[in-house]
Image (tube, rainbow, N blue to C red):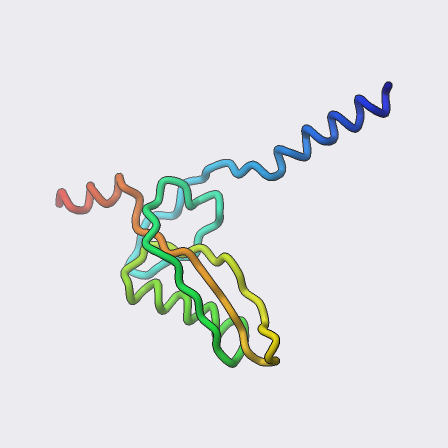
Length: 110
């Protein structure tokens, strides 16, 4: 009986590990900023961008950030970063987000 109760409590507490508690994103700046999954709530999604290029993981991340800046995204969330089957080539994909609706309406009022 105790083992069953322990397993049930362990299972229920484990479910909370997969629930993301929303957090506010940092204030928008002139350049796109990387955010976490918890900060993506209530942000308008502008699209997804993927890149595959030779180099290092940093090169792939810089390409994502450059694309986010070029489309005037306020934020980006890295979804995947991994080396391809071809050694030395890296694949990255990210969601691009606009500013939060409240700050977008506040800046348009000025």
